[in-house]
Length: 201
Image 1 (cartoon, rainbow, N blue to C red):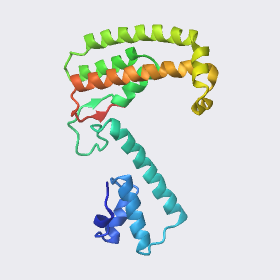
Image 2 (image 1 turned 90 degrees about the vertical axis):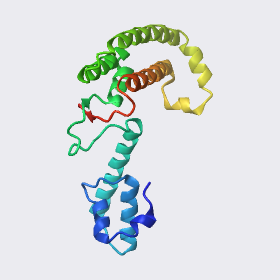
Image 3 (image 1 turned 45 degrees about the vertical axis):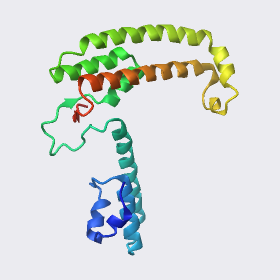
Image 4 (image 1 turned 90 degrees about the horizontal axis):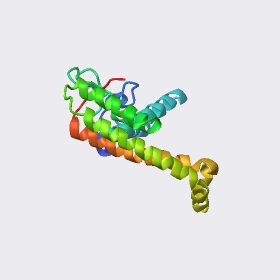
């Protein structure tokens, strides 16, 4: 977290680097640099303010991603030796959207690239288990969709979704939970939670 007391010691020229288009600083540091420059009398045009706000927005998105994937390195310049892998978030998305079999395939591709060759059996086992969970949970939720809808209708947040298909939302929620546990566990166990890497996408 950037501190205003620290940035206040910098010159205007140094603060200008914080709000530059190629800035590598955090969203909070960019916001503080803009505030300090305004306090010192700098006048920003509408276009400049719009560009800085867009820069802050993009940095916030990167920071949200880094909370889930802190070891994903975006800077290519000084990290040529790092392995190129399919990102964890990408694998999780495929597992939820399509099937854990698809996500497991890309985990196996990462494992093969790292020359570990240890993940294929666990992936196959978990993939079969995920199919069993899907085949049990979806028909069950479908058969009980009216009872489920009636049970949650009393809460306001149900109004944000189409009641008729709320059981599908629950199905994907279940899939998200077991996919998250699977991907996180397999990644940490076989690749290591401290492995730094670049995206293969």
